[in-house]
Amino acid sequence: MNKLKLIIKREFIAKVRNKTFIIMTLLSPILMIGMIALVAFLTKSSMEKKSTIAYVDESGFFSKNDLKGSNTIHFEDLTEIGLEKAKVIVNQSTQEGLLFIPKEDSINAVAKNVHFFSKDSPGMVTISELESIIEKKLRNEKMLQLNIDLHKLEKSKVNVDINLSNFNGEESSKLINGIKIGLGMGAGYMIMMFIIIYGAMVMRSVIEEKTSRIIEVIISSVKPFQLMLGKIIGTAAAGLTQFFIWGILLFIGLIVSSFVFGVNLSGNIASSKIPAEQMEVLAQGEGQHIISEILNLPLLSMSILFVLYFLCGYLLYSSIYAAIGAAVDNETDTQQFMLPVMMPLMIGVYVGFATVINDPHGTVATIFSMIPFTSPIVMLMRIPFGVPWWQILISLLLLFGTFLAVVWLASKIYRVGILMYGKKVNYKEIYKWLKY
Image 1 (cartoon, rainbow, N blue to C red):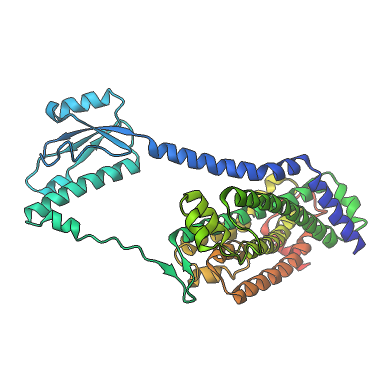
Image 2 (spheres, rainbow, N blue to C red):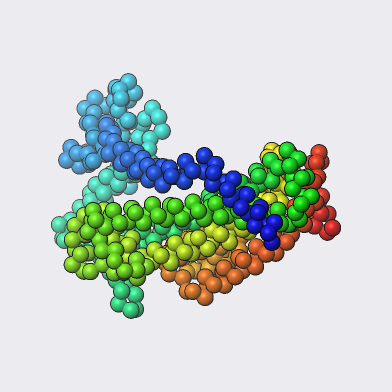
């Protein structure tokens, strides 16, 4: 046990004293916020970009009022000069393209024969907006032909905004559902990234010690299983230290937000509810309202479960990474073994994005949140929507039990492979090691 403690201490100190580890621990939150802000800025810039589109309308259905443009499109009428001349002019100009609306016998024929000419492939948003404008106008023309009163039809429209609440009387909103989706997706994706990053750290550490032959000296003093477990736990401790520092920075950020936006953080954040009067004030600004909705989520329990699933998921996958590191002589040889390790993580992310968003309590989402190799990702995506504690408990027990089984199998590979040099290892060879 004392030897295991020494190995854990050695691995932990080696990781946390690394300059890269220190820099990334402090800069990662800033880089993450900066990246989100950059994506938001670029998205906003692209949405605000105004395209100039020329058009030739031979149908006679469209007036300048109908094609007066929008926030993203400015129209220029070239109907008088004809299609062929308009093509030449637009091709030599900076305009995005030329919209051609032909003259046909029926409105349906016009709708099927509209063309858009451009030098480069047009954006899907632009085409979608053009289709919407043309479709609306042609639909109105068809209704006039059918003697339908457009004024009465417009007055008959009713906007429905469904209010969300559970059977306990607690109200929700579409905004809070969007926040839950964002937090769930973010947590699941982060878990996948952390498992890959910290698991790869364990694998590289094993390969470095093996190629430098230091491992031969270490193995003379400790058992291979102790060495593998020490590396895994030491790296996990470094990862938890990083999370702890990020948690402190997040807490400081919440306190600053409480002073800036007037949100009351007294008491347990996990169960605190913002008064109705304060909600009205916060709702006046979109940013303040979003922050208030986030603070009403069970942040404390979500943070604890994030750490638990990271720890269990990391222990499961890092034991496999350690076995791979022991089986090969260099990092290039690991590629043949990485696909089976990465596949469950990729499936977990795919199931989360494809299923949890639409049906967080459905059969597919529930099953994959129980399967140990995908549960760290899928369950974290489900948790913001509310998951029964018995499901979380079963999921964690299965995950931990699978870790014990996998670490036992990985240790059998590790103890043979750690002193194996100069031989290309394949799956058949690893299967033999498991039978020793």
